[in-house]
Length: 256
Ligand SMILES: Nc1ncnc2c1ncn2[C@@H]1O[C@H](COP(=O)(O)OP(=O)(O)OP(=O)(O)O)[C@@H](O)[C@H]1O
Ligand SMILES: [Mg+2]
Image 1 (cartoon, rainbow, N blue to C red):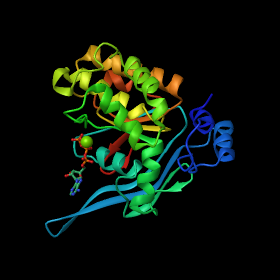
Image 2: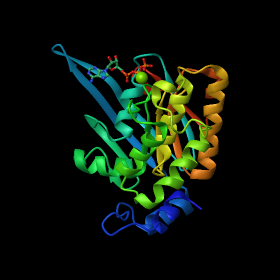
Image 3: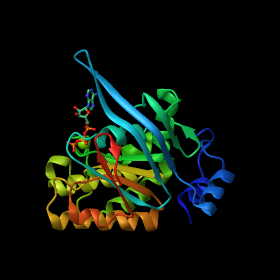
Image 4: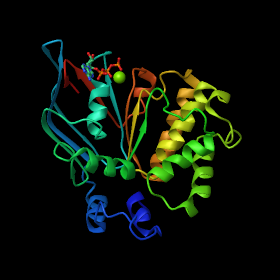
C-alpha cells in the first residue's frame, strides 16, 4: 500500500497528525498517477560581484510517483541549484514549483520547512551526519525532527539500518565507519520518516563501483517497499542506466 495511506493510518498523538495532504487527494494521486512534483518555467539567478549570473533558464520537469529520476550535466550546470529548489531549500526568481498541493515558489520558509520535514528526505554528498552521534542516534534524530511518535522509533531505526545493510554497525559513530557506510547511514536517515520524495545529490560519487551498485539496489528496493520517488544527480554512465528518466542540463535548460 502506498506510503501516504500507511502514513495516514499511523497512530500519532494529538497535534502531530499529518494535516498537510488530505486523504482524498492522496488517493486521487495514487489512482491517476499524477505528478508528485511539477516544475514550470523556473529561472534562478544569483547576484555575484555586481553581475547577474543566470544559472537556471526555464526549467520544465516533473516527478511521478515511484519514479527514479536522474539529473546529469557538467559541473556547474545547475543540478544542485535545482535540487535545492525542488526540496524547498531555496526559491526561484521566476516560475512555479508544485510539490503535492504545495506551491513552493510562493510559500514562506516556515511553510516549506514543515512540508520538507514530513515529506522530503535529503541525501547530501557530504553525508550531513552528526559526528558525535552513533548511526542509530543519527537515524533517530530524523524521526524526532519529523514528529514521529517515540514509540515507533526503535522498530523504524532498526528497519532502516538493516535495509541499507548496516545491521552490524548500528552503534558506530561516523568516524568509526567507512565512507560507503557513512553514505548508507545518510540514506537510512533520509528515508526514516517515510518521506514521499527523496532528493540525493551525487549519492554514489565517493563510492567504488560495487558500493555504488549496492546503493542503487537499496534505492530500487526502497521505491518498492517504501513507496518513495527518488530524484538524484549523477555523472556515472552505468548508474544512469538505472533511471526511469534522465534529464540532461545544458546551459541552464534541459535538453532531454
Ligand atoms: N548561492 C550562490 N551564489 C552565487 N552563485 C551560485 C550560488 N549557488 C550556485 N551558484 C553558481 O551556479 C552554478 C551552478 O552551481 P551548482 O552547484 O548548481 O552546479 P552543479 O551542476 O551542481 O555542479 P557540480 O556537478 O559541480 O556539483 C555555479 O556556477 C555556481 O557557482
Ligand atoms: Mg552539485
